[in-house]
Length: 578
Ligand code: PEP
Ligand code: MG
Image 1 (cartoon, rainbow, N blue to C red):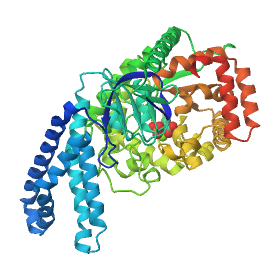
Image 2 (cartoon, rainbow, N blue to C red):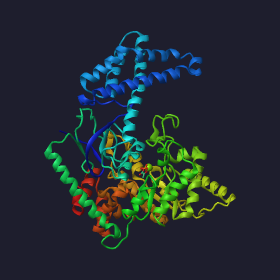
Image 3 (cartoon, rainbow, N blue to C red):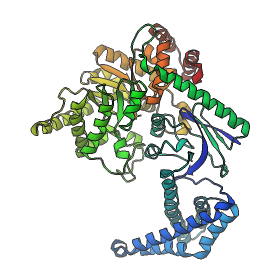
Image 4 (cartoon, protein in one colour):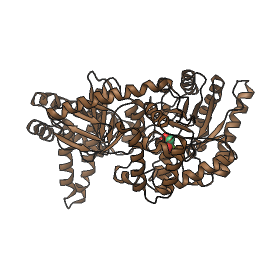
């Protein structure tokens, strides 16, 4: 039995057999196999070799390659792949060490590459790069097959991986993928956000999990406490089975709150809305008692399916979500692509610092045809219900004005063809950079509403990557700098009299609910599965208690002190969560 501690990013307990998926750009951990699976792994290896050889034959015969005289490079690759002793070395390794084909490929090829790299002859040392290329080529096939296995699961599993992209996570079949655990990642990474929205228990940032995961073992993913147990003993397994039953009872009890309003004990109504990534989640928002959709992350239309969505794809997706909430508001955020949300590799030029690069509204403003397709669809859908449009990552007035100008252009196009839309469509922005927070007063004059995206706001204020496990303890909404910015935005919004919500993960975190209410927030948009728990907190407190708590927090000078204080206050209300 091995117990690992990471960051809990999506609540719930999953107990199932592990399924291991790795990424070709990442170290391949050692994975053991049963002796009975030896032949199967060797067969997978053979297939990988023959696929790589056919691919190279095809590439080598292409005219471009011939013209440019780069056949030699491929000839070197081919020689290696056809070398029987080279292949035998890998099959022997699988047989003797009882490891997966991908691990054997990676281990042997890296050994050869580092041997070459150390030789004092430039011709030979440069061959190391060829070996890494061959490794990649073989791994693409082997890992691709693993991904296909994940796509066609027939039994329940928990996924163990170095890292997962938001797109991979969104593609999991919930009936079979019961949970996942990754070595990398952070609480507000988009992978974590998708897991929460789908209700898949998950733990990230576990560090090196390369220690062997025995074949045929069971793994527990405890998404409440951020713990993963590999190959648990009987006592641990039965304790977890019991804990899981208790938590299921607790959650279904919370679900009974669905019919009750999110009113504080002194009668102040708090509007609870849902964050969604896919249109079918709108139904979950309704089931959990949400009062609309406060954040529709539309970029997932680009991340899923591998093709650029057409105007009709956009329209259908929005129409589905709008119909599901039956007249309640739907805030459609224009696409927030870039940073960790990339449709495919080679999507746009490589950036050394993508979080500060061409992402989100900046990308849209430089890709007008793509942006206009989405805006047309949003406008067309605006007649189907209470639709609002929201621009992400606005940093200054000029960007907001530009985005609005393009929206007006699209409106004029629709006018020309007499296509109906709501000309009074509310236009809001996300406050997720210190720059927009500090100029909130100016931006409020030209916006119908704000939604505070605390995930990015924390990342940019504290200069802490939201998805990097090495700095995850520094990523905290309880930092006095973050709270000052929040207070100042809330004050500016109240002065301007426009709408305000918080849609970052802070609004899903039980510990921050009283503080947000005390700071004056009355609309929260959160992961749908968290709505009942947050409602329970709201229904247990008075606004006066929240105001007092907020005043007290304002006197504190460290995030640790604030966090402990908030945790104590929340534990008194909802001990089951902690
Ligand atoms: C945020 O940054 O807080 C936010 C809600 O947007 P996203 O998480 O999609 O970046
Ligand atoms: Mg954001």
